[in-house]
Length: 502
Figure (cartoon, rainbow, N blue to C red):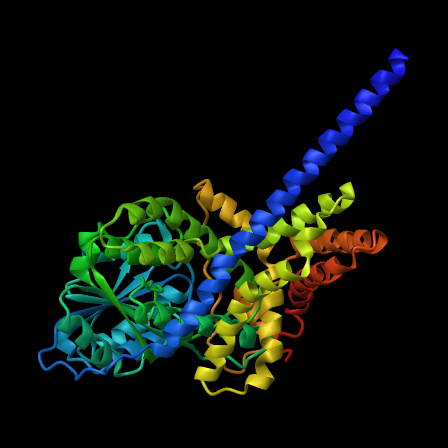
């Protein structure tokens, strides 16, 4: 009798603990789903802002201020000559233009730079190279080091793969001259290789969503925009006023933008001034670029959010939007954690069905539709064929899910402030080069996508569980994750062989 009572007690206790575990996991799943909503609905706000965005073109200045052009470079032998020549073609008086090549390279890039500098020095250009011992602080360290050599009132920055037009300074400098409290002007970054392959097409759409919708949307709504590290001009006094470039974050450009805002400096975005550059042509390059930006973004959020919420230079709406802005990469964490939690719920065999009913689904579908609308609007603004790009938008969504695991791990490192190496995204100056030449120049781009393979198998297991347990309304969710992780696997393993796949 006593034994039976103990058994009943233990079974009841186990069931109680199991029920509690289900409730905790279900609550976590629900919270993660809810946390995705502000980011989705913020996309609607950005589309609205992009629609009302206006920017008048100012007349070129008559008295040319001195401008320093900084070109941070690390092993960019395929593109550096093109950049130096484009900068030396800027319509700006030679005696008011200073060009600094910030060379941290350890390959033949340095030789190419020296040859180009000798040519343009002989033509009367004020151009020189600055080299350091070691890559301390990576790009941010190079920019900070270059400040003491920069004599310009304004500092224009271009990464190695960008090609500024000859009238770039003529179109940008007037805004800084007109408003003495303007800290920086950011222009739109375009693409030199949008149609190179399917990956470049899709990534170009992702970039367009930011530069055609998010940036002008924030500018039109008086929200904080960010400097994108290239294709922009900053006021040197503003840089020095906020303490210069920080080397403890991986996205020094994002941090600089908000540090300026916290000191009362303004910003301006010019959607109609375009500086074309290369987009990644491999899924591996894009994945690790996003992982670096994700870690850097969360580092900035950790450093700056408390200051933003205490600042008098941000009103309540601006504080909320800045929070969404700085934590935007947490979307990856929410997506990855959701699938990670769902499988244990399925194993426990107790799914809270009310979480997946019709009203709940509609509410969340509207939120997740925001990002797709943003990318669609960027295509419409460019008068591109929307019907032909629907598949690219779908593929972009799949890639976003597929890289969620790697980006989540990177964000965790960023939260812990664990230092990561600044990994430069390969640039090729694509002009009919073969796949083989890419592999020789930058090494093997293919890395076995172990994380994505594991997550694809994990998602397949979840699909098996929902079919066995007849929870059919969860089948679409599992299929979406399977497609996402499988997409990364497919393009990773395929890339070195058929990089131009369309």
